[in-house]
Amino acid sequence: MEVQAPRRLFPWRAVVLPFVVSRLIADALILVMAVARPAATRGIAETPLFAGFAKWDGAWYIGIARNGYAQSYVPGTESPWPFFPLLPAIIRVGHWFGPSEALVGVAVNHVAFLLGLAGLYRIARRHFDDRASTLAVWAIALFPASIMFSMVYPSAIIFAGSVWAFDFVEDRRDVAAAAAALAAVMVRPNGFLVAVALAFAVGWRLKRVLVVCGPSLVAFGAWCLYNLQKTDDALTFFKAKDGWPEITLVDFALRDRKIAIPHVLLALAAAAAVIVVWRKLPKAWLVLTGLFLVLPFFTGMVGLGRYAGETFPPFVAAGDILRRWPPWAVRTAFAASVVGMAVCTYWVIYLDYLP
Image (tube, rainbow, N blue to C red; front, side, top):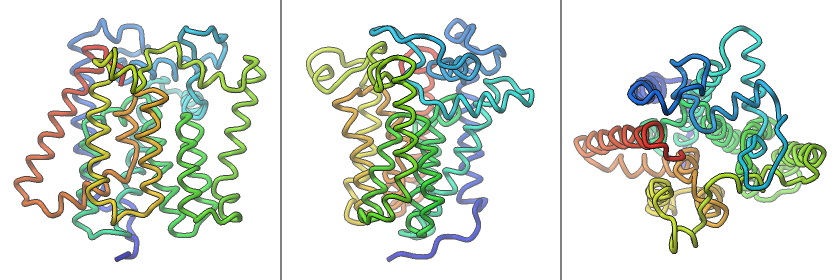
């Protein structure tokens, strides 16, 4: 049965406490691992304190914030072109006020994650009881891949944008939903999948589709035109991924498995939660989960662990599952998740796995 969304945006026990606890754990893990292996993060950020937070794609986002998309695209080589412009733009603007680019990126993602948790609790509360909704927030806050919500990655923005877009649609606030979806779309290519799923959420009613999804389509098209102007190819942002070690399902089955194993395990855990309670979830949520977790098996599986953590329905499902467990079992599951966070941090910072 649907219930009314909560009036308070940041309830302490349901939203703020999970945020504070999880970020203290995640941030401490990243700092400790970066200090333990400084060679892995040397030169990434101008301040060593933030080097671990800016590893991997974070260095690219900071570089784009400083220099734009100045590097030309050469097939088979790494370049800034796979990275969408919203996060670098926010970092650049924030840096105008004095803080370092790395500090701005870390701060923005913490704020975005807090907003995302508030949206998750709100939308879960529309469909499930308070205990399930609170557990859903804890589940994503302590999810092993949730360390990425602290790093200079677009994960926190795409999570917050997608969950609020769906919440606004359920509230019939279509203009607000369009703005939230636009944020998700302009931080990473698969953000466009949020707009596709929102079309299902509004029942493909033409007027609502145009309002909710139209701005995302226009912005995505504008980015394609920018790629065309600068590189003579409208899809450079997609083709440039060939500079990284992408692995499809065929590669995973027949050849290289190691680098994708953590991603597959996290994605399977998220998918399993949705499968268990799929009958209780709106169809558009199932579409969103399928798009985020199934398509990468064919386009590139490196990143699946992050995508699982950015997709809110698995955690709403997890909350409904966990509410039936005895308290000691819930505590044990969350303790195991914290261990998983440590393992993921070790993989990303210390062992140089691509997150």
